[in-house]
Amino acid sequence: MSPLKPLTSPALLPALLLGLALVAPAAQAQGKTGTLGGQPPAAGGKIMTKDELRACLGQQDGLTQRRKALEEAIARHNQVREPLDRQREALAGERAAVEQVMQALRSLRAQEAEHDARQRDWQQRLARLDTNPDGLSRGQIERQRAQLEQERLALNKARHDWASDYERRAGEADAQVAQFNQRSQGLDPQFSAWNATKAQLDQQSQDLDLDREEWRLSCGSRRFREDDEKALRAGK
Image 1 (cartoon, one colour):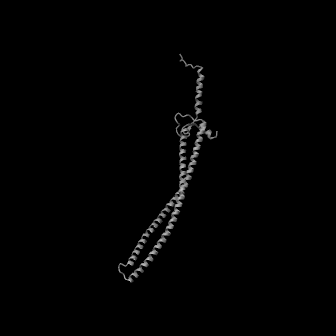
Image 2 (cartoon, one colour):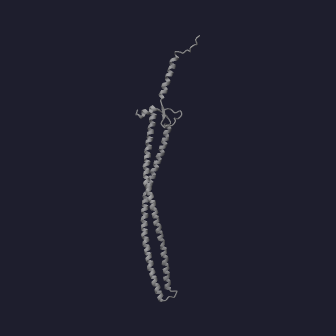
Image 3 (spheres, helix red, strand yellow):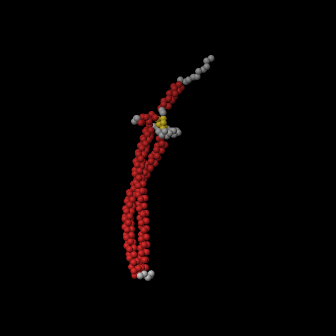
């Protein structure tokens, strides 16, 4: 006796065939997918629509352009800093030279005390000679007066020479200090402007990083259809 064959209802057959026919097109419609951020897709995330992909691609291009423009601005800004640093180094050398001049002037000024001490000694000897407590003869007094007069002339000349030298050096030092201060004060605003621009660029960089992170979360981890990407990049 032949084994019984399973019965298939004629009414079920078309439905079964229809179900089988629907499997392939549904899988094919999804196509190959990827993520814009090159990272694993978020679990359970929906595939982006073509409009969503268009918006994300536009944002990505905008972020890339902003990054390029910012890097170029930073490079130009750093080039501005180089001559400023050279000027500051030159000023440091000038400052050392000015300080040496001022130190020499202070040392010269200290010589005034020596002149004052010699002057007081001369006056004391003249006063002693006038009172003549030692009982010197007239001839001895005249000889000492002549000697004191020579010393007075020498003291006055030495003090005059010292004062002239000090005045000349003080004038040169004042000119050097004024020139240094002028250059230093002229450089300060340039550094202030450079620092202000750097702060702006730093803020732009932080803002860009935040926008990139926001894009990564909203676009970079979502799947898209590669066919949609090709069409959009082709202008379709």
